[in-house]
Amino acid sequence: TKTLVPREVTDSVSFGLELIDALPPKYTRVGGILHSMLPYYFRSLRQHRGQEAIGLQAAIGLLMLLEPSLFTTEEATIDIEEVGVLTRGATIIDRRPFARQRKNIEVITSVDIEGCRQAIIRGLRFAGQG
Image (cartoon, rainbow, N blue to C red; front, side, top):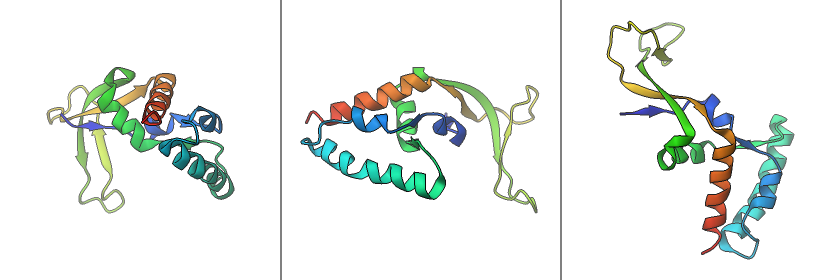
């Protein structure tokens, strides 16, 4: 079964500057890289987009595979609009109980935000041990 992780779900798990304090120590390989990159990333997002927090969308997608209990899913029918003049390329999700096509995808509808944040921080700390 395919699983769709919508952007609004991944964006709901965000980190502020407190993430820097939770990183592995600077003397580790992972900690050194992250401590050198993240302050500039935060500054860039603030200056160019007015955002005070960062999202780690790829990490949330990976976390769905590693810890599926943190996510709530719903089966749905999905199709891509191919011929619409205004909607070509749009993803259409049919959540009606009487949909004509069979359900062909799981859509993540909610996430344990704090659980995801803790799992990502645990993963970063574990990566810093080696």
